[in-house]
Length: 492
Ligand code: AMP
Ligand code: MG
Image 1: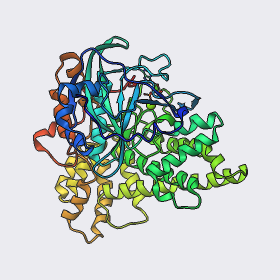
Image 2 (image 1 turned 90 degrees about the vertical axis):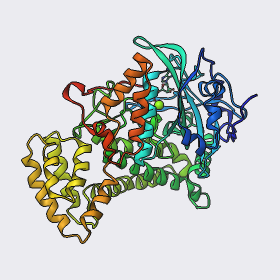
Image 3 (image 1 turned 90 degrees about the horizontal axis):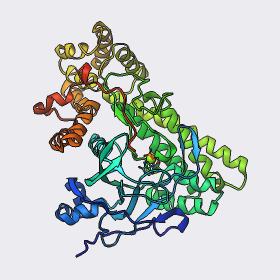
Image 4 (image 1 turned 60 degrees about the vertical axis):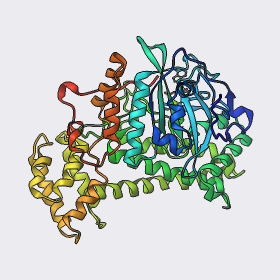
């Protein structure tokens, strides 16, 4: 009996040049290694069926569930600043859309499910390591409360993929509020297809920004709304020490979710110039460069929308420029508000940004661990004795003492109790992030030893990042020097 999914496929109903109809390529021996049961339930899918042998076939692309209309989406994109007019889903296939428990439409997509007309020279497959990395990091982001695509399942295919060596193949089932990217707009803009741009923009507005439907200038509203979501997203990344690694325009989601986890990483010791990705030789996508790159990507998005703004080109450009200027303010608002909470400040004060920056500067100089500094600061807010746990994170602990005095003076002016302050700080300063050495370790156990227990345990820890979880205290620790991961590699 075929399993039926409650699919509604609005993207597949768009004009034929938006995608290629293509079915997944069956794999030899699919085996489910992880199902995200709570997410399955939220999506209205039966987790028991997905965990059955037939489920593994569906989640590997070997069997199509009833109701699916599989497509590979067309898109273009700027990769490291260079425009590529045709990228598209080269190894991903959208099965369809479901409405989740919150009434939100979600794409269900297989990643690594075989070649498509957009594969170029690629094999359409994914290796187990990058699939597990995306699973762990995207679920960690969700638990941190940061907009992201989700991971529904991971399946090993029973086949090998050839990379530098032969590696076990895998398929990730990814869930997104849509897979529409800045690059999707660029695909049609590059072809001068204004009708397609309008259809795409209308689809996006109906799907992600319905509040614009009744407005007079919906396309200007769309640009403004996407700017606001990206500004907030990147601010949230910075506030947890996340480095996306490949912020190409094809990896920039129109819905404002974090998408396409490749050589991404959370930093250990704070360094604004930190880069992990092996292919980012010039540091284009370094930690502190991310806001600037987001604005660059949004500028490419704005260029696509110009023909929808006005027939008067100059007027359209002027409108776009005015809207793009709001990015800095939006970003600063979210970033400063976030830093204020990280420092446990309830009231706004002129010097808040200065106070935060002074700490960050000392952290950079003293190679202090980003996550632990703020987490331990949360403890120190309630107990000055706990200052010693913070100061020992700095190569020269005295650097912290001077700052701490300034900080205590500032919080001393606020009426809130130490408990209230700690509660505020603990809710925004995670104890647990997917540290690179932990992610590498779970991948090694799975790939070399077919052992998924470390993967499961890491997922458990990361599902409650803001709780202490004393039994898992070791997961909060930075890597020892010999465990340090200096480079991450692309997902391909
Ligand atoms: P990414 O670096 O994952 O964002 O991918 C960039 C482009 O390369 C996208 O168009 C992908 O679909 C495509 N791509 C990446 N890996 C593969 C692969 N193994 N086979 C086919 N296409 C791929
Ligand atoms: Mg991509």
